Image (cartoon, rainbow, N blue to C red; front, side, top):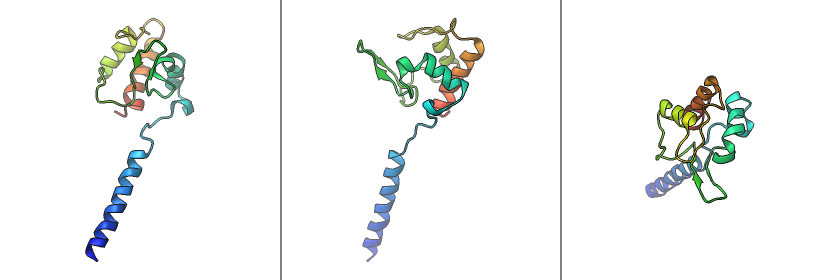
Amino acid sequence: MRSLKLFVVGFFVLLGLLACAASDQKGIVIADSKTYSASLFRQNCAICHGAEADGKTLDDGKIVPSLRIGVEHKFKTQDEIYTQISAGGNGMLPFGKQLSERELKLMTEFVYKDLRGN
């Protein structure tokens, strides 16, 4: 009888863990967001990083990384993210002359906090 109870409890714990793993861990839904930062992302970044910043493979075969997930994020701090957005590099175009200082800071914060959950 005790092993049956343990089995049932274990089964429900496993179901709970699976439900958590399958749930949407993305946080913000960019397509639904009315923020200026999300609008900037849709206008400037989605073409390469995907509509929800999940990354994608371009027509020429280049892989653009996800801005949401991955332990291998090359640019981890807000300063590093700002520099990447502003100066570009590693296949990314620079946005330092296209976006205002305020917009660069908004995009940095958007990536760091909204997309990565820091």
